[in-house]
Length: 244
Length: 313
Image (cartoon, rainbow over all chains, first blue to last red; front, top):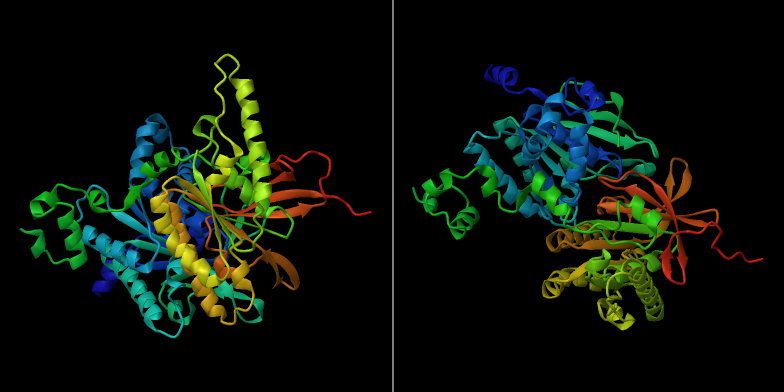
């Protein structure tokens, strides 16, 4: 009963800034849930992350924490997205407001899984003692697979243990602090030449929502389909465009 | 209340105390962003980006699609069929990073990691001489009214500023990647690391593919960290292979799917008829575009309208 109340009061939906994805997800990314974006290289995962970042910082006016493992966080691209939907209020005091929006986005460069744990634990402490000037709403890890792949396999089980505890920590942060947690994962070759998400079977059950992205070569049209969702059938798909 | 009494992990307590916060009252006035050691806001990152100039490729069209040239703090992968000019581009970048700040360059040094043995010193000398010739010409054109400041660069200086490493096995490659951090801390003016090619030692005789994936992703992370922490550009040259996709064999870059996620940007070099083209395959901020370029005796230059590939009659 309490869970139902909590779900209705606190766990709202955050728009990604992209209509196609929002429609597919019945409104957007849900707070309290771990959403995974899976896709081959260049399929738009980082672009969706940057778009969601700009949307949360600009429209929802909440804080974003971006963990970047591949030096792919592009402040210029975030500004492009912010400028895409011109808001008359923003145009007037342009520079100052842009600065305020950009200051809500915090980017950490993490290059190994232990640093990621440190950053997440620090974030946990900060969230518990929230000072109130900027509420963190979105946590992005782009990409979690590059942190896990070097330690997964090879006879020891430490890699699996670290991966699952990372997953649980992210879900805990999402649930306790009403965050939207978004992670990206890449694909590997599977049987018969069909690609499948990386990180294997143990990771499969950890995210609440799994979305698969792909990109039509040479165009700006992307496809997204649902691999797993707690309240929707998998296989539902949509298309969306990301403009330059 | 003492920081030492707070219920946080030992490592965090240590960090707070070493940063000078010993009581709770000293912490209460800070905002979470101040405490986030090692993080930056997007605004700061935007302004920092403006301080890092890009490394030109000497081909204007290619520079344009790259947004000015190869970007520092990023890992750029360049791949293509044999003979397309990957090593030539690598050598051109090793020379161009040394262009003095006055001429719009970085005035920095380069590290060239050779795994295939394709680094020809005579060719580097040729490209270096051509680069100095171009700069002197530019000097002559732009600074007519000033006292002609003699360009004090000699091709030998350029050769001196390229640190060359020859790697003969994958273990050496991994060891060198680990050693680079220390080397670059001692030679802080290195601004580009070129690996030619990153594929060579991982292609033949690798029985355990899972091990290969782990090793490569480990190397990728270390190079990313190197690029970010020292603010330099990492350029990885890759070979091609065929892959069975959607019912046909297609050319793709080697080292597999996992490796394709290990770079920030990817440029694919290919032949279009008799012209060489470069295509931006992956980038967080650049549009997908193609640009023609050519390989001349002076190095990489803009492509002329006549074809460059010699046809055997």
